[in-house]
Length: 156
Image 1 (cartoon, rainbow, N blue to C red):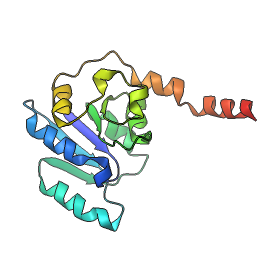
Image 2 (image 1 turned 90 degrees about the vertical axis):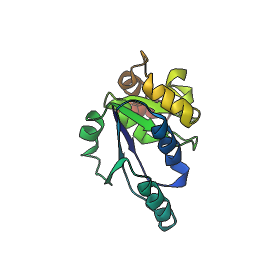
Image 3 (image 1 turned 180 degrees about the horizontal axis):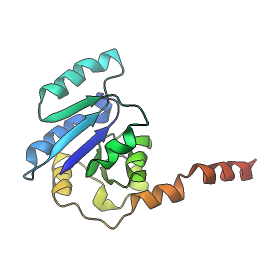
Image 4 (image 1 turned 60 degrees about the vertical axis):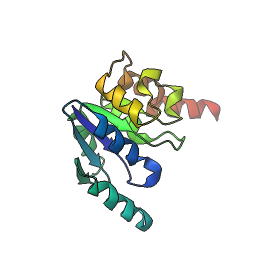
């Protein structure tokens, strides 16, 4: 299984959860990390994550490259628990990817089987992934730019 995570590498993004979960997996898998530390104070954290080994770091990619990257993987793992909706989760869903998240904002629209609480739960959900949730349809219905513009216009 080809796992993917995309985003800034920083402690708030909880890469430690994915590292611990990866150590628990008993299936054949790979993990690709797209992103880099943006702030000077996050560079030591990135080096520590890289030193764990086992992950393929591809650095920062531009937005035109991301759809192909999303579609070349099996499962998007979103570890940020900040509470705000992360665009990478919606991008992955828009590209038709299976997703797992622990984000509080995602709990409002993702079914419970796609929400994990900790590394053990994440490892279990990766190994036993199942859902009927269609993330692409959700994004098209709830985050379509034309619909948003029409909604904003109706409010004005």
